[in-house]
Amino acid sequence: MNRYDVIVIGGGLLGCFAARNLTRYKLKIALLERREDLCTGISRANTAIVYSGYDMKPGTLKAKMCVQAAQGFGELCAELGVRYSPCGSVMVCFGPRGAKILRQKYEQGIENGVQGIRLLNPQEVLELEPNLNPRVVLGLYAPEAGTVIPWELGIAAAENALQNGADILLNSEVTDITPLENGFKVSCGSQTFWTRGIINCAGLAADEILEKVSSPKIRIFPSGGDYLVLDTKAGGYIRHVIFHEPEQKGKGLTLVPTVEGNILLGPSEVPIEDKDSFATSSEGLAEIKALVSEVIPSLPLEHVIRSFGAIRPNPYWVHLDPLSGRYVPEDKGINSFTILESSPGPFLSLIGIKTPGLTCANELGKYVANKMAEALGDVVPNPAFNPKRPAPLRLNDLPLAQRARLVEENPLYGKIVCRCRKITEGEIVDSIRRKPGAVTIDGVKRRTGSGTGRCQGSFCTQRIIEILARELGCSPAEICKDGKGSYVIRNMGNSSSGKKATRND
Ligand SMILES: Cc1cc2nc3c(=O)[nH]c(=O)nc-3n(C[C@H](O)[C@H](O)[C@H](O)COP(=O)(O)OP(=O)(O)OC[C@H]3O[C@@H](n4cnc5c(N)ncnc54)[C@H](O)[C@@H]3O)c2cc1C
Image 1 (cartoon, helix red, strand yellow):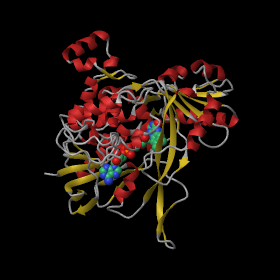
Image 2: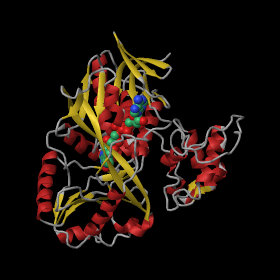
Image 3: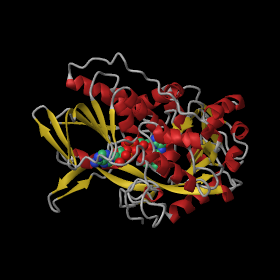
Image 4: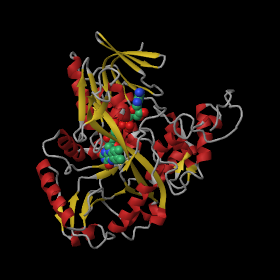
C-alpha cells in the first residue's frame, strides 16, 4: 500500500537528512526523488565547506544552526561513515576595506559563539599559508571550519534513513498534489501515494512543488557559479579553506583543499535563466583565474583537471503585479533560511536554502522532522533508531595487511579499476549493490570517487560501464553517464538481458 505518514519530496542533502531525522520517530516515511540517484542537483555542485558560523547575523536560526553544526560535524561524519577534513579556514584581505569586514566578522563570530576564532597579522597568516600573496594585510582564522564531500554525506544520510525503515523511491517525480481532508494524495505520473504530511525539499523546484497546493509566495530566481578543480599534484599548495575578501565590491575567491586532496576554486557569480542548466560560463571561469593571480599568484593553474557549474536557488518574496498579471519579485532577496508552513497542512517547505545548507543539512532535517512530528500529534520516538551507518570499504584507506586479507576473501578487491584514485572492482561492485545503489557511471563516482582523478575517467569509464552492465543485467549500451538519455556508447545492438538497447545520443 502506498500509504505513508510523511512523504519527503526531493533527494538532495536536505531531503536525505529530513528522511533520516524522521526515522527517529515511529512513522512510515517515503522519500520521492525524480532522478535515478540522490544528490544530483544543488547538492552535487557547491563549495563543500563546513562553515564555522561567523558569517551569519547573530540571533538568527541560520547562525545558531551553523555554529552548532560545525561544532558537531566530526561526530556526525563519524556516525555516518563519511570522510571529513576539519582543516579550519582562514579569511584573508589585501587592503583596508577587507580588513574592516574581517574585524566585523570576528566580532560577529564571537557573538555567535564560534570557538577558537582569531584575527591574524600578516606574518601569522603566512605561517599558516606560506604560498599566499605576501601583500596580505589581515587574516581571520576559524579552526572549526572544514570540508566534506557533499554527495557522500547526502547518500550516507539516505542509506541511514533506509536502514531505519524509510522507503527511498527513485525515478519518482511528483507531478501533482491534491489536499484531502486528512492529508494529501501525491501523484508521480501514474503512481499514487497517500500521506498525512509532506516535507518539500525539491531544491530548485521547491517553489513549483509548493504552488501545487497554494498560490505563489516565494519564487526561486537562479544564478550560476563556476568552479575549477586542480589535480592532487597541486594539493599541498594550501592547507586551509581560504576565503578572500576583495577590496573592490563583488565576490572574492574561495579555495578549498578537498577531502580527496584536490583544490577547488570558485565560485563565480553569473546570471542564468534556466534552472536546469549546470553549464559553465567562460566569463565565470576567467573571473576565477583573475582572482587567483591576486590571492595566490603562484598557484599552478596548469594542473586544472575539471571545471563545473553550479546553480544558486535565490529565493524572493513575490507579489501579483495587477498590470502584467504576473508574479514579480520584491527588490531584495531573502537571506534567512526559509521554512514555510502552508495550509492545508502539515506541509513544510524548505525553499531556496543556500549556503550554509550543506553545513546545516542535519540540523535542518532535525528541525523539520520535529516540526512534522509535532504537527501530526500522537507520534512517538522510534526506539530502534540507529544513527550509525556502516561506511563502505575504502581499500586505499586501510593498512596493507588488512587489504591483503580482503583480497584473499574477495579477489575483486585486488583489481584496480580507477588508477588515479586506486579504486578496485570490489568497491565498484559494492557501490552498485548497496541500497540505494549506483545505476550510472556518475552514481559509481559519487559513491567511490572513481573518475575524479587526473584522467577524469579516461581509463576507467569503459570498465565501469562493463561492471555496471554485468551487475544490473543489461547491455553496456543502456548504461548512462548521469541521468536519463546520457548514453555513452553508440549502436551497441541488443542487450545481454535480451532487451533492445535504447536510443543512444
Ligand atoms: C554555488 C553554491 C555553493 C554552495 N556552497 C556551500 C558550502 O560550501 N557549504 C554549505 O554549507 N552550503 C553550501 N551551499 C548550499 C548547499 O549546497 C545547499 O543548501 C544544499 O545542497 C541544498 O540541497 P537541496 O536538497 O535543497 O537541493 P538539491 O540538492 O537540488 O535537491 C533537490 C532534489 O529535489 C529533486 N526534485 C525536484 N523536483 C522534484 C519533483 N517534482 N519530484 C521529486 N523530486 C524532485 C531534485 O531532482 C533534487 O534531487 C552552496 C550552494 C550553492 C548553490
